[in-house]
Figure 1 (cartoon, rainbow, N blue to C red):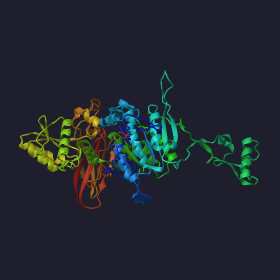
Figure 2 (figure 1 turned 180 degrees about the vertical axis):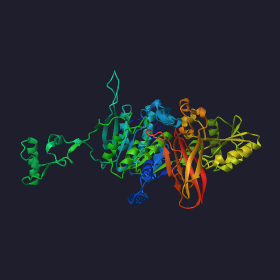
Figure 3 (figure 1 turned 90 degrees about the vertical axis):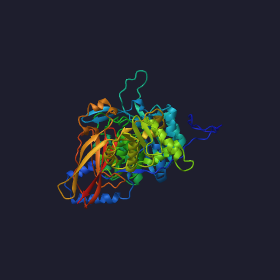
Figure 4 (figure 1 turned 135 degrees about the vertical axis):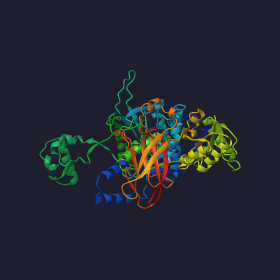
Length: 637
């Protein structure tokens, strides 16, 4: 029986039967860089529309040199528990400020407003967003507390010794979260309980209206950084405004005054100087004498409907709120983080305030929303988009299906195949070849957890289906060799086989979603672009020609009714003119914003410095945040 010798919050599952704290050891997995953004659209547009000067070229060169080898900010898609564990090796004790706004009040009502063409619709939470919510609240408060406890322990490892964490919460769980922070960071390291009074309208009749959130701030040690935030001018400035010059009051301007405050201040300054006052001696310096912000923020409202920053993202917080916290607890150049980044308010504010940042979210739509938001910031510094990719899948596979007993991989591999077949609604077949199952009249091939589906393995599957008299093949994969579908559709037709490729969604790794069968396999989207010569030698432009989302029956009716053209499904697209088979680096991009719903379908001209053979990668993100990409081979003479 555990001896209770301190005040703490306890919930079912916190301790084992012997009274030992149940803590999963941090899992460190390598990150994969999937996209590297070197220039925002706002910066590119400004550069292309303005005639360059010698100073512009000099400045671009200086910025390029300055950013080489420096920390690049990171936007990470994935489970924040795995992300936190994976960051610990390189960033332990290095993050100055961490703000988190865990989903304490999203509920089953989580909806996102999505723009389709010129109209808006309300988008229900995707399955992956539902899973994130269910994992948080599945068994009520105890599930939320358990989730947050594990992540706060990892956050403590990442926080710098002079850093602080700010946890945004409301009345539902403020007491429980305060106790978690007391336990992990120490009650002696409590800094502030900030009240954000946002002034929302309420019609409560049986209680006072609930009109505020709380932000609990804890430090890692006593040596945390804090800079007082100016709230208003000193009341003395307004009182003597007629004699204020350059934000100061000098003795000469008030030496004949009989005001008791002036006389008292004059005596104080004279005693400090040890001599009689002169006309140019300063009695009041309002640059250093002002009213500081207290722990009640009543002057920052929720985001209004017509605000420029409004993204119609349900958990979006105002930039002014984050700006005040960053101004108080960080300096320029510090590293800040948000591991429930949502629409990216913390990251965008940090970028504008010249702080480096790390952001993470499980929602695909959240990552896409944040990417667009950052790209709209003029002079946004280079940043990377990462995930844990096949390393996360391999970790899930090992946890779910166990280690190989004899090292040949057969037992766990068969369990993996069985698991995926059941979720897909297929039945198993002889696994000695390339075909793993049957669904209706279609044969099914399942790709590996650890590697992309290759052209060679699909060719073998097509031949096997043909030899068995089959006419249809479904291929399920996590990742795909570039150009696979375009290459193999005609080959499949030559064998009288209809080929369909389906994405294995990340949701299969979420235990609750898999258990309830809430997993949908989407067919890969069809993307067509054209690359044509420009007006100058070695110059080319890329045009979008077509984009098709398969399985239209899975798209809500309210979306389909508003689609007037295939372009309406596209929210963002970009081109990497020199893809190197690893990281996508967009040299040109365009996307829709709330203010501008137009989408260019042709890039500006790109000039190659040298003749040669190049790979051009075109990436499209649809209105639901799903990525599609295609590679074109280009010969430049």
